[in-house]
Image 1 (cartoon, helix red, strand yellow):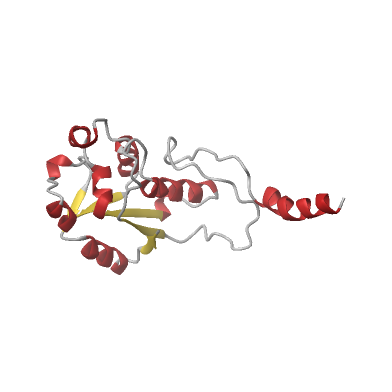
Image 2: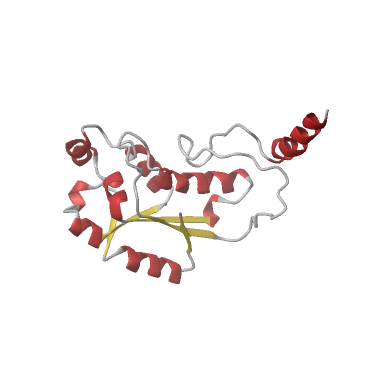
Length: 178
């Protein structure tokens, strides 16, 4: 009986607070699954612009899978839309550098490096169709010998990741770095 009580004391709040099963989003439907959070104490402001810039500087070593940091941009859009934030209030940018530069290559270049099509291609297309800016560090591109024609066609090049991050933050985008 004591163990059952302890189990319920530990597990029940998690069951009541969060839905255990992820759900598809309404903005980027094929990516960025989220979880419902019931009655959070810290309320989401539904009327303000939520401008975020994601600093994406790494891959995770498996060329067959999505870069989860790129997928986080889809989660960001979907989770906020699910609680009632207007799509017009969601502004998102990804600044890509380091090993993550491989994840924004076009299929031809990706296939020449890894032998398969880029698993991030349709995610990148879905994000940019919804207005997400995806910006590649020009310094990373030069260091890794990546030309504009090597990348997904919707990728923008910047002088550097540092430049893009500073300029976006100067425009009130808030830095999200994992």
